[in-house]
Image (cartoon, rainbow, N blue to C red; front, side, top):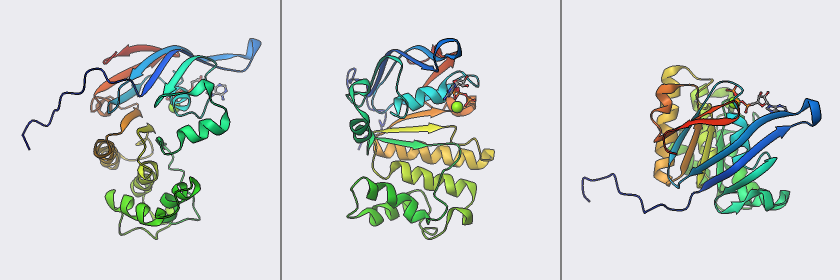
Amino acid sequence: MTSDTAATPAASPSPIVATQGLTLRFGDGDAAVEVLRGIDLAIRPGESVALLGPSGSGKSSLMAVLAGLERASGGSVSVAGEDFAALDEDKLALARRGRIGIVLQAFHLLPTMTALENVAVPLELSGDAADATARARAELEAVGLGHRLDHYPAQLSGGEQQRVAIARATVARPALLFADEPTGNLDTATGAGVMDLLFARAAERGATLLVITHDPALATRCGRIVTLADGRIASDTGG
Ligand SMILES: Nc1ncnc2c1ncn2[C@@H]1O[C@H](COP(=O)(O)OP(=O)(O)OP(=O)(O)O)[C@@H](O)[C@H]1O
Ligand SMILES: [Mg+2]
């Protein structure tokens, strides 16, 4: 081991996320809303990127397209080597499975399931049932919740619920971790702890992290800041 932990990345690895001329429009004709107006973005594996911008600028919409939850109206979207536009719904679901983890502002845990079940179920649904419970337990221990496995969401604090949601997002070891205002429902101190955890888990797993935030201090913790305005990239510290 050397003390030099800032390893030089390999020369220009191919991007794990690449869009060109990406557009997103809701509705038709006079009622059409142009939400994304030509996004060119390339994110390299292992980068941590903050997505900033005013309310309504298209941050969540862009994340939804990159996560394969929303179809682009135009342009190209390639994620983890898959051309999303070319995939039908089934293939898109397969492409997302195990590759993309998502953490949202509202934790979206299933209220009738324990913490352990909330983390294990996505693995089971993806046909990875064999050791799903053991893996879910290990993931919850890694986020500091080994003592809360059998608690239901209503029995957990907001910060604990978000940590369960992080464990659920990372348990399948996705290459990409997307977080949309993950601290938006938490007080400052709890939110800082959740962000520490998200950064740590992404780094341990070598995952690429894209975080939407309104918090400039949080954004500066990311290696790169992309700012949207009115459906376009207004600035990009890594572009
Ligand atoms: N399903 C939809 N149909 C029509 N318009 C939509 C739809 N979803 C989003 N929009 C519009 O797209 C624009 C961008 O929304 P988006 O949620 O991406 O913004 P945002 O940057 O994430 O904002 P915030 O910071 O408030 O979360 C908004 O004007 C919104 O009203
Ligand atoms: Mg949003």
